[in-house]
Length: 282
Image (tube, rainbow, N blue to C red; front, side, top):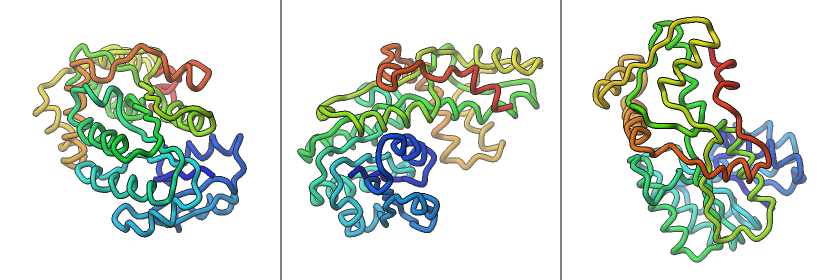
């Protein structure tokens, strides 16, 4: 039996969608905070179980009988570590045979502040003694695709990534990688550094937007503080604006680049090019 946390989230749903191609629905557990949001999954025959990171007893029950567990990193940045600790403790109590965790690219050396909670979580998993595999996911292309409409409207793409190269991939690529690990044998002890086959700078990204839509779009590199203000002025919550601006600066230091092509090898196909996704984002 395979259990997935955050199963109603964007990544979780894609992982389940992929698993269903080779795993019977009845052998998949959707561990979710709000079971009502998983009615569509239940209708497919998937076991939906209540799993709240802040209620440890629900986690143990949700993970009971699971041979493998995919711990998709929690969404509440700043609160992830205690939530992940609760999930890891519950996995150990439930006797989970393999714990897979979605971390961040090169979590142990990443310049992104976002990596701190991931690095600490990896340490907790290691200390737990549970057989584990780490999926160090690079940037989702969707993180940048959300800026395409505004770039087309104003003719400028803002950022703080400088000349940093970004080897992003589609969320579906990462979902397929997680499903592959969960259905393979002999995965315990492995650490995957996952990123897109191709990389680009944000200036090149702006050029691709311009090329596909026939409009002038230029990249404007801003200091981190100015970029954060621009994001807040555009309507983003301050926390998200901080995350994005800090991550861009991390990208300028190489934090979102990797050329090992482990993601390609794991999913058995090329990763989705950014150009392919830009077509759908305008």
